[in-house]
Image (cartoon, rainbow, N blue to C red; front, side, top):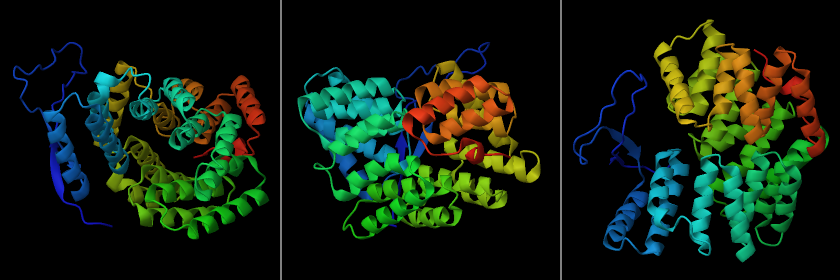
Length: 390
């Protein structure tokens, strides 16, 4: 891992009081710094960021500079798992937000909309881009959104279009994002082996591509009850990037399935600033100790839930459902949030949470709805066996 220098990113933020009876604090000076949010920025990103910010201040109407800066912010948001950079990217390209012909801006807009879980709006932008010109990245992003929203047929269609536009590794992984969860267990194991061999023989695959390939392989292996293989792949992934939220959440779920709660706590303890990982940490702690020891962490999480509810932010409904189901054991609320979440996104983890809550409450109507979705998309995962039971 490259050595990184640490610097502080100073952002002005407005704090809204949760207690409606109290007046919110309003700064009387726009230059007042309310808080300093630390951010780890690599030397390369820091240098490029400073250059682009200087140019942007000098030429605020130059859309090419704005595009480069917004792209860098999105890259930093993904590499550092820091959502604040999406907000900065949005603010930079805001003057061109409604463009109908600049595909670079439209792709940045689609990235931001996808992050905000506004999948329908993101698809509109991607469809516009693809109507203007064939665009590999837009095809891949659209396939990913169809995957998240549970439309496997459209994923397959877009992945097929990638066959002659992307590398064999990318196009094969795109196809596997469906076939890895729709094939029988023997075929799935063969596909995982083929995919990992292709990765091994592909020179200069970026870290992002490697993590994408390995993550899908690990998730498929885990859902196929190949826990030893899944853990091996996950450890290979963490050797590439030890703080990847998706990979860590896969590992945590695998440990929870096997009731390895102490290991789960140790794995996630350095990463509980991430909502996705915090909820799994709390689940492991509740199971290991019979209660939550880090009550201040739970209070922080409860506060996040209240804040998101006030703002109408539904990006973490999956995590809140998980928390209510396995920590608070408020099954009715878990089901309500899981169902709302499932209408927007239907990744397998979303379906498993919804299935478990519906099963506990005996909601056969919801179980039938999940079964219909599985049948329509040829999903070959046994929800009854794979839904976490603790």
